[in-house]
Length: 401
Ligand SMILES: *Cc1c(COP(=O)(O)O)cnc(C)c1O
Image (cartoon, rainbow, N blue to C red):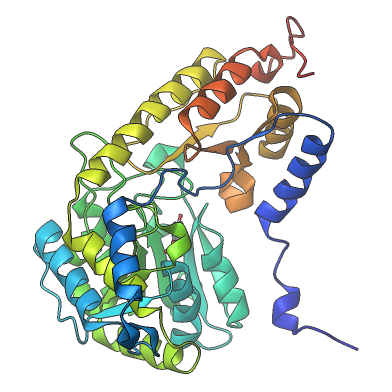
């Protein structure tokens, strides 16, 4: 008997599931483990958004099947957001589609666009669902290595001609997970020009578009000249408004791509609960000061953790956006060895960079989406661990118990 398809056989165990097992074993052994592995905001959804959900959920007409492409008010609110933030005009009917979280749209975009045997370009390292969606669609992916020296941007000229000939789609993600890297508009123009030249579509994931620090403002790919011919942009309320559990996102941009995805979705799901869509529209239109407040919290956490990492000799840089720190492991460690050492010696989970692709080797990711006091405790424990310096010195190592 076979219980799953050959396509399913290609899917490796979910990386966070493995980390979860290790964590559970340590907790059982009485260790106070601090998990800096998963990016899921600890901060609450602002009250005015939760209140709106309650209000809309009490209206019987909102409890029936939702509109297939998304509630008109939600799609309009997304278009208003693009006008306000980027001066990009979108037609809510044809250029905006509601999603059950952006991950859902990312996963369904691939089979709605590519056929088996075709190639999808993915950043390396990247958010794992890009690669998994390609495997589930029977396609293959080509990793675009992103190096620290080039600001964690792919070098388009390095993609082999033979690969490009079979490529239909390219994923990009800035501000990026896991690298926390950010770009300016000129990079998106370069990407759009490259996509046009090579007749491929760009799917830009902007999940962290509003999780930014100081003066930095993350551009939209739709600001680039000609972007609408070749690009779609995924967006999410998950990170901006601390709404990960609500499952609401959107995709905007190229009409043809959006139409194909809408057809795929109409035959797969029936859209998100209307009160959630209306609460999300309220989030996009309402008071935005919550975003600044959240970003200030992440910024302070980031400063504290970067400081702690530098104290043990790790060359961590301060990101301009996202709630991640992406830092090189000390000399003498692989990513996996370093993560294991941090867990064993400090009781802290950090994600090995190699979990995000081969070019993630030599790095690790720290997520700042945990309460500040726990993060401080994690930073203090890491600072005390001389063994983590990577030079093998074995002095003053404190035990956890
Ligand atoms: C969190 C995250 C998402 C998922 O967002 P949802 O809208 O909650 O599905 C998408 N892309 C990246 C890079 C993320 O980190």
